[in-house]
Image (cartoon, rainbow, N blue to C red; front, side, top):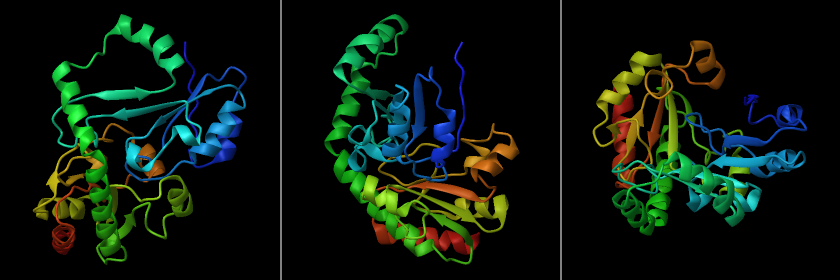
Length: 268
């Protein structure tokens, strides 16, 4: 009984055209996975609030360190705590942030009847992770910026995608909305899937895994893992090419990470 309308998150005219008198909510990633497009939270919130719709933001890639989505107009902000908040890939969890009236009203009633409660031990892991969240995320972002700068323009890289790079299409918005490019880098390896696999297999410090936000650096091939079920035409539309590799930067020594990525590119 729920009707969903898909829009290009970067196109504000599409957002406006999708709004109806009975639109109840809009949902989007503030930074998209894995192509790292950045949505204008304030602008979308103004459009949605014009018809009384709730604005729900998945803020995982932006992290609570760099993005105050509520201050920009979001009504509800969601995080997978398995990612940066845990920081070690040890436990599954999530958090829903909203007003007291929302949390103690419809959300609490729903959760009471459907479950979804985190175990005490997992909650303890997440609470401990929050103690070092700011330190880890800032170190990860510094490493991401270093790797992005080193790989931009490399002969084996068709595209280095990082919101902190000056050539990112939403760079000005990124600096206004986050003040940082974040912890994720995506590299479109020239030569397609085979070259991407050679690159991944040559990495020594960066580990191959589908998780992200860990203290250790992690690389993923989205087209054959996280987004493998999408039809090829949707992958093409979203920019998820056969050569695309998503790297979640960790807190290892920055120079070591740059050296590891560069030597792996020699094998691509």
